[in-house]
Structures are given as C-alpha cells and as structure tokens.
Image (cartoon, rainbow, N blue to C red; front, side):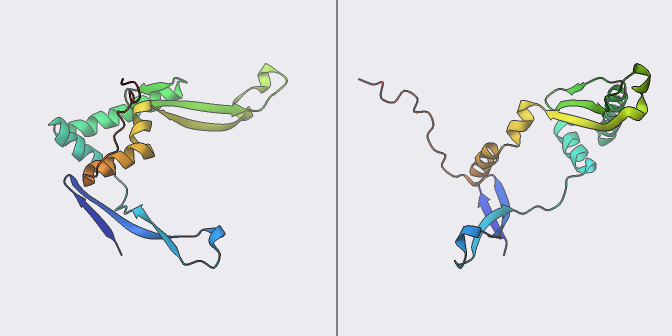
Length: 156
C-alpha cells in the first residue's frame, strides 16, 4: 500500500517496507517508510529539465553535453584530473605491479584502471540525509525545530 504525503510544495510518494530486526525474534513484524522510486533519471530527462530552467533549446544542451563528455574522456586519457565546477572531479587511477627494472614497468604491469569521481561539497551536501530530511519537511510544510538558540543562557 503506497503512502502519498501531500504538502504545500508537492507530494512525496513512499511505501512501507518490512524490516527484519534480528533482535526482535518472535516479535510482531515491523515496517518503515521508504521512497517510492519511479525509475532512473535519463539524459533526456536531465536535458529537458535543464533546457526549461535555462530557457535554451534542448539541442544546444545535447551538443554541450556531448562536448563535455568528449572533453572529460580526452583529458582523463591524458592523465589529467578534470574538475567540473559545482559537480566534482574526474580522474583515472592506475595500479600496477612492482617490477625490478624500468623496462618491465609497461602496459602489461598495470593491474587495475579506474575512473574515479570525487563529488564537490555542494553535491555531497545535496545528497546528504540531513538535507533530504529538510527537503521532505519543506515539501510537506512540517514545522522545523528552532536551531537558532545559540545565545541561550547569556541573557541577564
């Protein structure tokens, strides 16, 4: 049974999920609320949203996206770390065997290649549980706790 929580700024669709708690052997079943995911967001979804927000044609964003992906690919292949403002940094990590001579340190000695992504603080913060909870409270119009009591006790 789905739960749709409605607030002044929109809806949040969730569902109850059964929770298995090993320490509650023999106790009644327990449930918690989870997000109802309606699917993954595609490139087309992102482009349509960004085009509307930026008031530019979708075709321009498709070309820009392709150019951005090509640039990331090109510079990472050259060994550079590629920083995308407000998003993060892409870089290639290589692991290789330790060998006795410089001649042995070649492509065959590479044991692992990985593309790494290090998100910026802004992106990490947007995906943090604290911000997700704040966004849920904001959408649903729930009363937030007063956190501005820094000077309590200083009054005379």
